Amino acid sequence: MKTSRFFFYIAVIIILNLVPLKAFAYSYGNPNEEAVAEAYKQMKEKLNEQPPNFDSAKQIFETVKKEIDMHMGPEPSKAVLAAIEAKDRQAVIKDMEKILVLNIARRLDNIEANFDQYDTSKRLLAKAFATYEALSPVIQGKAPALDKQLRTEFDKALQSLGNPGLFGVGEKQSDIETFKKSKEAILSALQKQFGLKSLKVGHFSERAAEKPDAVQKKEWTDLSKAKNWIPLIVIAVVIIGAVLIYVRRRKRA
Image (tube, rainbow, N blue to C red; front, side, top):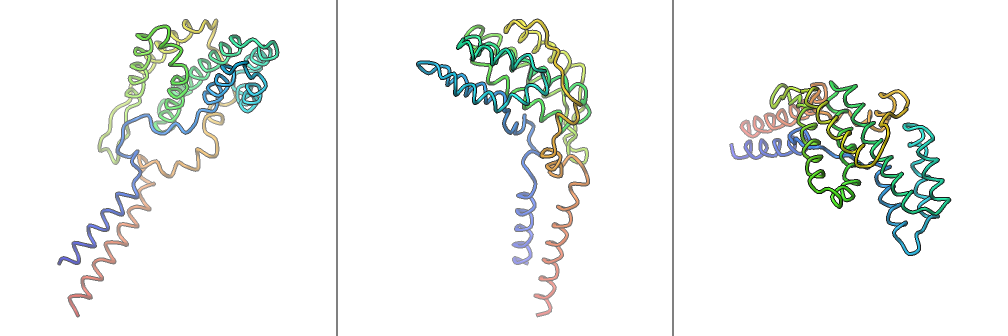
């Protein structure tokens, strides 16, 4: 009896370790790395050197130029490169901050357009928030209350996505109207704070742009989809079967 209990506990531990924590957590998730936001932070460090290191800043910018051109058109890159060429430190930083605002707008637009795709929407919101985190110190320095307000709106946007739960357990309905209100509050505040005339951006197909192959290959870990439980169920059946066989053999012995 003690032996069967031991194997049962082992089986439970193995299964729990196989289930990703995100199946139970309700958070932004791992945004991986928002390349444009990271480039901005690295460029700012180089430009804060004495004297400003424009060559290194340009090299860093070149690593994300293609992505910026693809999603926002050529104008933002032209402005940044022109400011670097003119060795205008403040202009480079301000233009990069505007690019980050456009990047947040792009992410939020794509969430609204694909609101029923929970896993993708949550990932895009994480990226939008990661981008905001790069801008947050600037806003905190000018308007601390606004920074707090924007963080609250991001939290509301996250809650509005709902949660498909696991087989209905922990399910929470999504609310696109709440998302739209938070999106409007975030974007209007950022547009005013950073002095953008428009937040309209040009980019390729939303689905192709926001869901690269690397992301598609990770979808099997989304346990909100019933089909992704099949491997875990098979493993559980095999373990339980092995325990039963072992117990029967012990009794016969």
